[in-house]
Length: 233
Image (tube, rainbow, N blue to C red; front, side):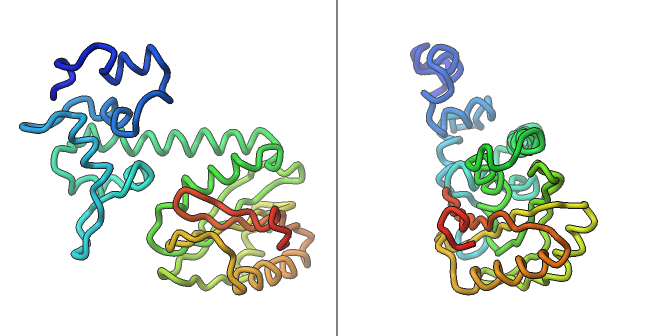
């Protein structure tokens, strides 16, 4: 059904203004970005189909929920019928704005004043990747964010992490501390023995240059685990 045919209080824009963004479903929020549908398909139907489209065995583009869609690149979105350059740009811009807002928050305040913000920031960067990525947050002496770098990329199940490279990047940023992070494409955020061993190896290597390892965060779809909070540091 076209938006103009819906009752006023059921239209996404009016609903948002009257009741706030939390009152809208994912499809309704996405429909606000898309603005219009395509021939034979209203914008709400198009938004809902985009959110529930999944990557198939042939490797065609697809998404599984709002996180998958908003982690998509502009090239991923090119393959979706009905998404022209303007709509693709808006969807990609939303995620980039979220990343920058989170980065600004972490740059302005001591990281562990808001540990949930760290997890959310890392989820925005890592949660939807289909391969393992090892990243490091470099912090100053007040534990404020200096930079984040994705240092190593692996396969679905493992990543080779080189302590020497982590040490060199810490020296480059004049970091006083770091937060380690990597994703589990499987979705589980439970740390493996290899994760625990890697954490200890990096703590020892970075300790030689007086850089503290404050945490190691494991990211999965919709969740993140702090090894420091688990007492595994």
